[in-house]
Image 1: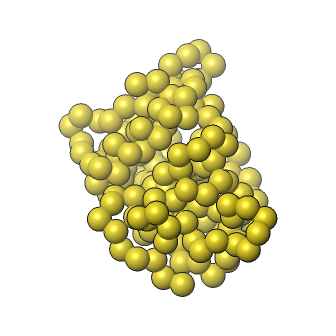
Image 2: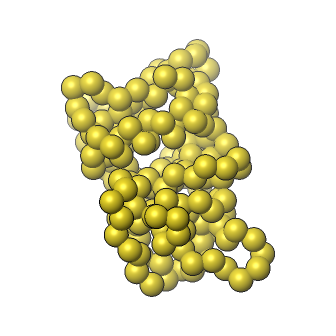
Image 3: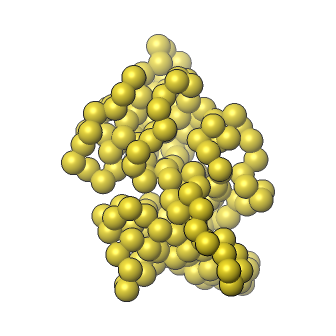
Length: 168
């Protein structure tokens, strides 16, 4: 199955739980104008192509926001790597691939970051970058840095982090 293109920066997004226990729905990326609206879980259709967008926005309680971001590693010489980032119930985790997430593997480096301990802010000088800064002593000292494909996608991710509990 292929997904229809959409004018939305959130097009062809992938989420992973059927809406009910009835027959599995078509992929969320092909529903409601390309904005994913299904609750979190594992994808019922393993043959689904990887998402081409950066973000799957979900709008109901106990649902997941997930998509591809470029995440900067730690250290002076660290570069950016493509990661499948998942926001679920105020917690961020990230994976090397959608398959790792769908298989239920642990997030990379075991990271499960409590978003409520961070400020999510766009980088003013870079249209496609945003950061998570520690907002409390429980957050630790790490600043998380991300890149997206566009300013619109960056803004959607910042909003998603804030909706999950990060402060502005």
